[in-house]
Length: 216
Image (cartoon, rainbow, N blue to C red; front, side, top):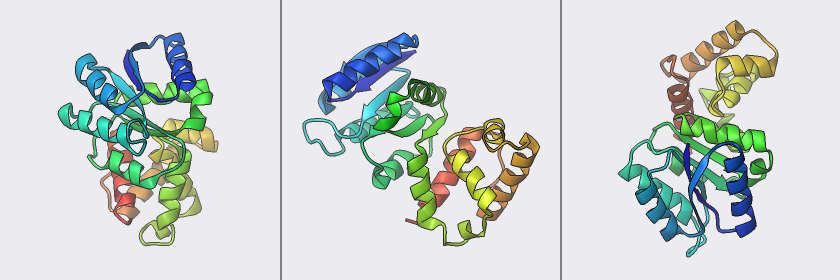
């Protein structure tokens, strides 16, 4: 699997390259600035891009904007964004086009190899990998608003895990309940949120996140 990596801190960039290669990814480009990222994404046609939000020369949201531009040129390009802090504006912008193959992780997560590699693989496969802290903030911002306020505490737990990109089986395992029980919770969530039930996990996660985001 071909990866383009953009990170301006040399030690972190080098560490991520080594980690990805240890898990049989091919890092076709490892760059440190926005212009280099734009060029690498255009020329390398990677299977997934792992991108720091803040890159030179602006050190604002250059990495994110380069990734979004690349997705416009190549719809559905899988992008996993790394950020030092939870920045909801960036999460909303990444999710805005409604396509799969997206992720938003805090940089602390990259030090857990299994979690980071799982996120890269999930995004590369067209899925979603959202940092739990990002999802918690999106949920808490609207927790008192209808119809989200109509969800039960258990449904809120299930919704948070759904938004992270977890399947019903994975949610059942984490909450130590049956998959059938999670299926019922999922159906209730979609009903209360006015969203159509779908067997497509990626589509349902994006639909839920997009719905929550409309209340900003």
